[in-house]
Length: 469
Image 1 (cartoon, rainbow, N blue to C red):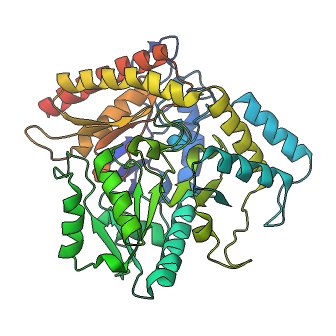
Image 2 (cartoon, one colour):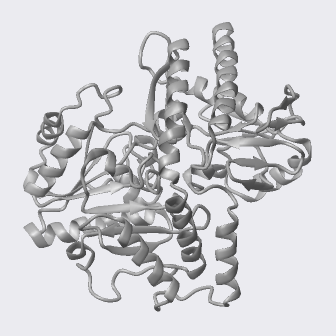
Image 3 (tube, rainbow, N blue to C red):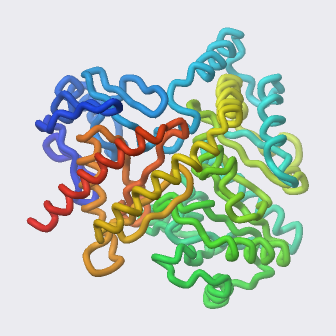
């Protein structure tokens, strides 16, 4: 990205800081009454541009003021339906009073941090998480970000591999097009080549295979997995672990259940750990409490983050006790592990998700959402694929006549949707050619229908603009 006269460029696509007149919007859930970006927000946006790295300028220039439930407001009278959940964080909804109260109580207790010293609130959270997960996922290690959990999972896979088969058993198998984070190990496990260029000397102990989504990779057979490993010279006995997103963050694509069940058997047979990255998929997002339930399997390790607290930075690795206990006391810690305030937020969020049956709501309302999105796909051939489950979806934008990703169209649809009062983003996978949809799990059917109306208007305008160009 480069800054150019108040504009920022992301692979030749730009958001302008010059306010633009847009049609007024007034529905029960959406309101746009100013130019976009709002003129009053420009001084703050310019301050951020001066003092933050260019890399922080990837989102539409909407200056958030407050957020509640499934809606976001700025300070200038505009109101959006949030189809981002703050990048899949606010599963229980924005600004839930129960979470605010839990955070306030914990802060007022004057216990704000403990390092790894024990605390009641941390004990309560790890016990609650373990109680909700199936056997053998019963040991919980709290961290801060999803990237940290992936790094930890890699460490545990290799430690387990060396113990089971010697130092040659260290290969980590992951999937193309995957996103696992932005740290060194997590980006090597990731499957987006552009994000790895900075690493230069890639670890040869990572191997990648195609993700069986049935669209970008037509062959969804498990034989394809084994064939790809053979072609790369990877012997099964040398694989320490296989890691994959439960659904791919860049597309919201799931693997076929039969493939995942075969992968589970393969990992067990070769003493390799199966790791599901549920940083986006967990806590009700997919219409089940855990995304991996769609596959009828239980992994050896699970990475959680984002929706765990619906608010504050917290993440967790949960796994088999024999794997989680591989490292001795004091050798696998984190400065902010189990921060008391974050734990309080997570406990409150989990009780909301469970107590209000938000996974069920995601399945029910998500069913309506996917039905309407498939209707859009039938109308616009530029939507090559609709992926997802529950309240996550990805619309793959393609160029006419094929599967070639059309990032320009996706970006334009997102821009126009924001101007119509629906807030969303294009993820980094597939060159930004997916329109990602992930509202808070408290969203209603009426708000979904209103959102899809705006999205359809955005697609209609964007496709006309492309045709005229």
